[in-house]
Length: 242
Image (cartoon, one colour):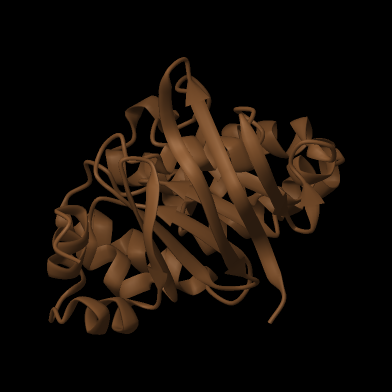
């Protein structure tokens, strides 16, 4: 299987602090890959480097075969990101938000409207199409935010804690949407919800204090730690028991 993302000793320093300590791993095309760790583990910093929002201090990485240092313009054309902070324009309606993003990325008016309708259907947004984004619940706003990231037809989608702060039902609804994307595009997910990662992931990486400690399937990580759940396996790895 071809790799969508490759990291080789990718490192990021902020002054004397090493936020990411030379990560090396691969993400195969079409899978859902979860990047796990407690706050400050280096997950978001890694995503910021892979998407061109932060420059690596050292090491190499390739996204869609393109070098993030020398071919960043190409990287940006094939990937998109839905951040922890729901990136929507609060005073625009749902459909205006979608059209705005599509047109920023250079789609013609006709193509932007076509993509907008496709995303509306995919995320069941039609009932709130004319609502201003600021009036939506957290769950609806997250749907819209991910839809805005997908309207550009990315090959690789980064989802940084997409269900953070949502209630159980809203989280389950987003799980269904995210699961429906598997196999169509490559997804990199960060989350603090271990049951979410266990339910959705094809492969999981666990970071502790900026260092990659494990990278494998959920079943293989559970077997490695001799734990029955990903949460127990994660705790064992994070606390240095393994």
